[in-house]
Image (cartoon, rainbow, N blue to C red; front, side, top):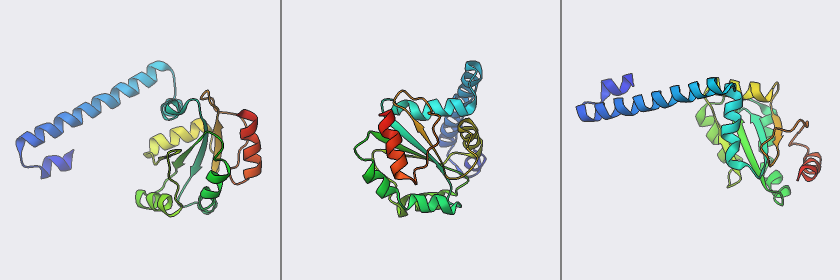
Length: 173
């Protein structure tokens, strides 16, 4: 906002920017109050917010980073994974950890991690930490399954082992 105040010369545009900024600040404050009053942690709230649109589908969650060699090796095999699991109604949800936007977008493009069934998040650090704490991520890459009811499943998952992953998906399908 400080930069906008300095660079925007037209008063009507400045007023519009201030108004829009205040609207977003109020919305963010309301969301924080809603989270606090619900008794949910920020991570739990983000979990529900991100997964709610995909209820009725299995969600494979992947925590990765552009700095992580095993993560990048796994992402390089994403097309094989998508093809192998195409008969199941799966959403692939990717959370990038500490990854600069340009490198993040390049990794997505280079590995063709796209499609109607693919969702990407490159969150700001506070939100990324909160969602990782909720999932109890302690290494990268880390994978999790969410069932069709939106429940985080307690199974150990490794998307790099497609046979085991497919067997697990068949059991929860």
